[in-house]
Length: 446
Image 1 (cartoon, rainbow, N blue to C red):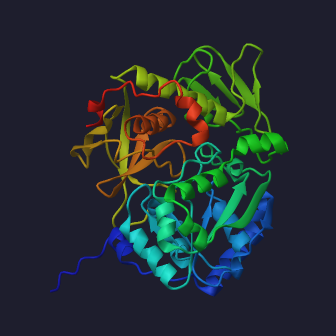
Image 2: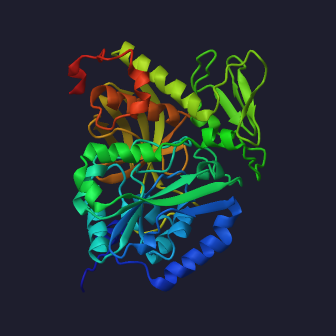
């Protein structure tokens, strides 16, 4: 009897061939999105350059603010069919994998050199298709854009085809990264031609990266303060889990000791706090409270604190108890899970890198990543966990405390101190002005 072994989901994804989305499937998907999903969020669209006038292959890049962006990109580009890149782990979730297959969405192992992803892109471009992706690599963490993935400029120059830019505003506030409750306010989407092939060839890769970062420059909280848009369907949860990112008290400095629930955030150590109204504005409890203008300003304060602390302390070390999850091999994930629990241990971040020591499937297991291998964290859904590819394998990491926000900033600034391939924005140079020369000896790079 022949011993035929069933292929794993991973193997099937690696072997999958891709083509442009079916015309009817694309129409049906747009009909559902534009008729039933997008209108809930009060969308507004503007076409500066019509992508449908482009007859050959092209790219669509967009600033990725929330998990709802695909609906807005779909509407502003229709009837142009495109294949969108999507986080690899989403293809293992039972409520998504069929839709992703029908729409010919391309899997991407984010923040890695994923050759299967490049193969899929090549297939679509050779067929004269359009590929849509966010060069930031993931959706917005705080409501503002992140630096694009290193090498984006070289990537676009290699293909040398038109690059259209879909600029989205307001989308983060419909469903933030800390609380996935959906809210209604206003979303604006605009499409324009960012690069022609001729422009790409005349520019350096760094110039291309700089232009994209500048085009993406945006803060949803600052935008909403200017527009003064009222957000509804709040369910009195405007502050729910905001302490995932606003983890440090600006008044007493206590860390991971904030409570954020319903419509308020409060320091459990000194009582400093505020409420958030329907305009996403902080309203301090009293005149003695020290509260940043909005959450993105709070995160900037925390980042500058980490920049200072790791430069002043060559022995800086942060540890956290964690559990880990892996992707299943044969069955899709159910109940909105992102992985299957498979181990536990202790996670450490220091000047040498990120380290884990514990167990996996009941056996001892560990990993050590230096800052050439990791420069930020993949926060794919919410701030209760993050993911990374260890030896090309997807690993979810769930922290015991609400410390993912701190670990994220710590990894990013350790990378910038010791390697700095993934650089911060030039308009944030002021954060480093007092530290022109690293205070840490070069031996910590090894």
